Image 1 (tube, one colour):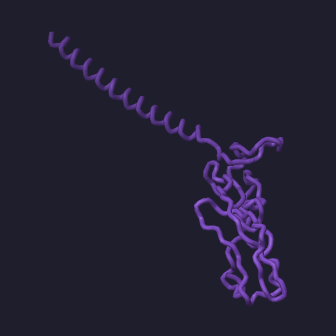
Image 2 (cartoon, rainbow, N blue to C red; image 1 turned 90 degrees about the vertical axis):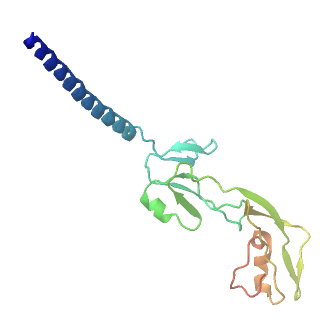
Image 3 (spheres, rainbow, N blue to C red; image 1 turned 180 degrees about the horizontal axis):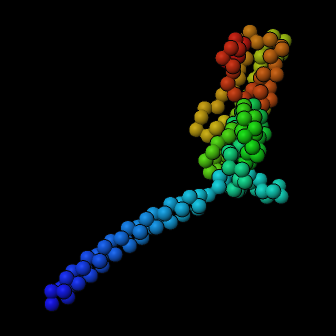
Length: 183
């Protein structure tokens, strides 16, 4: 019957519209769920730090305040080779601002790892009258792995007041560029 045929056409068109419309809605829901999932499952910043008890080794941990990680920097003038800054999560923005010189701040997961260090040796110097003499017992110095280690050596123009620059850990590292008595 013509009426039945047109009903079939209307029914097919209705079904097609119904399926297409539901697919659009389903796709929108899928996109919304995916975006919500990406936003809600973001992980907090992880920093290397000493656990709250303080007796365990430093390990990665989630920071409550997702501001920055703090950590030590290389310091060849001390026996350990690193500054005394603790590996930790920054407590607030002021801690990041205060982190200068002997401290490094960063915002990537576990970016506050200790620098890799290598040992090398330098001879300390003593002043005997007006002559500088290298000592027999070398000082163990630290340098960042993959870099060149420097030792201070006094020039003949160095004076007695300079003796502390050439003994102990002070002999490690490069001479300041403006120091005319050191090379």
